[in-house]
Image (cartoon, rainbow, N blue to C red):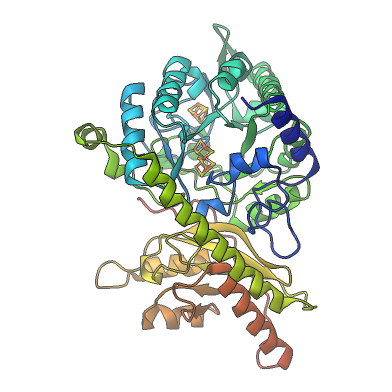
Amino acid sequence: MGSAADISEIRQAIAEHKGCGTSGGRGKASCGSQAGRGDLPTAIWEKVKNHPCYSEEAHHHYARMHVAVAPACNIQCNYCNRKYDCANESRPGVVSEKLTPEQAAKKMLAVASTIPQMTVLGIAGPGDPLANPEKTFKTFELVAKAAPDIKLCLSTNGLVLPDHVDTIAGLNIGHVTITINMIDPQIGAKIYPWIFFSHKRYTGLEAAKILGDRQLQGLEMLTERGILCKINSVMIPGINDQHLVEVNKAVKLRGAFLHNIMPLISAPQHGTVFGLKGQRGPTAQELKALQDACEGKMNMMRHCRQCRADAVGLLGEDRSAEFTTEKIMAMNVKYDLKTRKAYQAKVEEERVAKVAAKQDQLADLAGEMSDINLLVAVATKGSGLINEHFGHAKEFQVYELSKSGAKFVGHRRADRYCQGGYGEEGSLTMIIHAINDCHAVFVAKIGGCPKSDLIKAGIEPVDQYAHEFIEKSAIAWFKSYLEKVQSGEIPHVERGGEGIRQGALVSAA
Ligand code: CLF
Ligand code: SF4
């Protein structure tokens, strides 16, 4: 737990400004800008600067890992099938390898010594971490002892959170995510068929009321102690989509730092109540509209990858297969803090260079009056660079460009087009569908066939900025686009997209 001065600094800073979850363009000197620290107080900056979920900018550079030590759960969500990981922070249909706390600590050391930019250990399932308090807290204890530089992060449905706040603070767990999908029990009853609380099973409105009250109480107790809280909400069209604006206000009022509205991913094969009923998830456009509507009230996370309970690596990449229990038990691990720090110092230099490049480019947009606002997609492997081939990309990051600069607004998953020597036509159609509200796609390299299909679909393939910084390049391209429009060389055409359903394009990986 931080000092009293730190706690009051954190609470005041959260109340006063928009924090680090967003990525802004020109003029946002706060942590919301990708310029890094901005006006963030030291206590918060220290917590977010290298946490890939709490800072959009950090997620290009720093990795997290999850350890799946918590199998049990104390509630039932209609978007969850217990055969799989907790869907509050995972993609449905994924099963993680369960670990003991000792195995988890060994795995953390193995990952930290292999991936020096891994800075956060999270426990997010496969059930609810606080429904498994002994295993969860024992793991955090072992990790803190073995690697004091690693940030500890916990994700919970919040039902028993108030009972564990003191332990969380005592163990120096600095980041807690609570999944809050409603503050109205009438809505909650449509999402949660039952909870198990104080040795008793509750259903219907009563269950939803207990859960909602406990979640908000837990949030208040955490923020009072200076612990940074993120709220996850699953957007379920027709059930809680409009209501999430009210949830957003309620959690902001109670000191939440960041709100992550995630799309419901439901498919009949996941065997969930919603999947079997045919409940659809939101389109990318619906999700963005809701995030935009909430952003005025607090900072929104838009870079969540709904990762699995044993995820390892940068958000969006999955290196869990390199660290199976069998492999880590056979590894000779040496935790070298000095090497990790040296590597991270290099990462920081890279971040500073990236920010400087973007600032230079932004200066070129100064005085720009155009109200044109458009989206572009980017193929990237990380580090904030355009460094992925079109054919190898399994997701595209989406940036909104306007006279204020380049702002990260989400990502679109896709099946990879290149299948080792040949291009998969079905994948190409899906990729074009996934990014059809974008004016351009930035890639490190692209072949002739996909290039011409993209052009036919009205999406400009851009490979001239290969291996350069994303935002700087996007701003440069946007400037030249505006010049062409203003000179009459090309018309500006609005691209609305056709309503891609989030999750519909999830690859099997
Ligand atoms: Fe893990 Fe969650 Fe901590 Fe991040 S994930 S426990 S806050 S370290 Fe991040 Fe993954 Fe989204 Fe979670 S991208 S699912 S928000
Ligand atoms: Fe499933 Fe997680 Fe909900 Fe529990 S809290 S029912 S594991 S989604």
